[in-house]
Image (cartoon, rainbow over all chains, first blue to last red; front, side, top):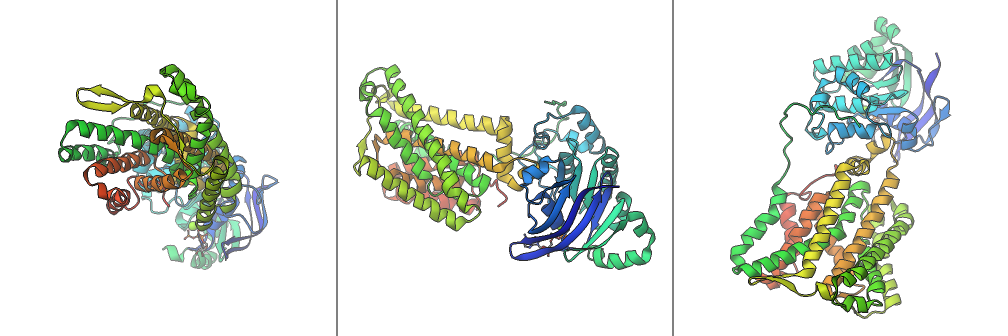
Length: 240
Length: 336
Ligand SMILES: Nc1ncnc2c1ncn2[C@@H]1O[C@H](COP(=O)(O)OP(=O)(O)OP(=O)(O)O)[C@@H](O)[C@H]1O
Ligand SMILES: [Mg+2]
């Protein structure tokens, strides 16, 4: 299995603060990779570094064979990355439709793809012409994800999508991520809830203090309770 | 473009209309204080005309701040440069200006305004590339840099045109008033209102009905996310900066004709006024800027009539009152 995305020796500074200390990992094409880690471990920073929002101060980021760590965010996005930030960042003054028009870039909105999205997020159809600012938290998350998949993208970076959402919505999201993968996209997903992570992930990365401390198959980790305990102690304790 | 069936009836998100009512309430509340109907109409028309001109000058500034968090204290330079450039057309063609023909008057006004906009817009391009680019994200340096730019521009205008006030007579057919009963409405004020309204509607149209407009509104709220969706916000910002500068040039031309004079200090004076308007409206909000400009003009006109001694501080008082009510201005748009 080839890796669509690789990070090697990535260091990132936020101002004078050294956050990532040599992050190395690969994200296999066509799979869903979970990135776990306790609060402040550097998960969000890793995704922002890939997007060029907090550029790496050293190291390499490679997407489909191209080095991207020096490129500007819009150019990185145009290589086919959909990004769902932790804050969701929907444009609240714009309608649901307008948010998606911007996300589709030069392409016109594709009806069949919208139907596909409405299939798991019916609320977006219902609130199509409403201001995104008037949506509930869960609906905003749906919109933020819809923005990332409104056109086919090769890689999706999704930051803690289930945080603070009702269980029913979490189920819808899990279903959605499975569907996206079935359509051929590669996913790197930050998730603190191991129970959820287990259902979505093919492989798993655990980050701590700005370094990757575990990488492997999700299935193997799910079976290995001792390792789980050890990593959960590292990664998920703060969340429980 | 997709047009999926409109959703079933929804509770429409509440529009915040209170600020929109503010100028109306103010105008109505002033009527009994002013007493005579004709004075009230004159003052109200004067306020609307002045407000529209201020809006034209301020509109670019609010978007520039909203979109890129750039504090441009040199915005007044574009206003002054626009006014001076307009004299390059209006003074040599004084014959057309004085002719008692609306057609000839407009034939000289239109190119004067267009030239003013072109030069101010081009100057905006240079300023953005040379001054602003160097001080991105650094407010203190932006203030120093753009304030310095304003001083340089003012001195350059003195050097080129001399320190004296340049008289700029209104075209003949725009002088005087339409008289309806005992109410007089100055013709030029009507024109200024008309132009201001066209500019306001034009901006609204672009912001609400075009993709560029959507990008600007999205960028005002969260420019990182706009970039993460694959758009180069720097280019968008350069475009907004140039259009804002050009509008400042147009506003400067209109203001100079309104005052019938041009002087390099107008850039400085109007910068203060325009900043007050932008702050009252809420940084980044075009609607707020429009209402803010009307309020400032109303307070100046009604206040000047009722309590002339307050004229100097009325703008500041208005700003304090608005900020006490809404600390981030009439409409808070940016999350910053
Ligand atoms: N804007 C910032 N300026 C300075 N330091 C920051 C900033 N944002 C995050 N950090 C620091 O960088 C480190 C990593 O933060 P990051 O947001 O990547 O963690 P995270 O794993 O996403 O955590 P969480 O689970 O809380 O989202 C933390 O120690 C945090 O304090
Ligand atoms: Mg995070």
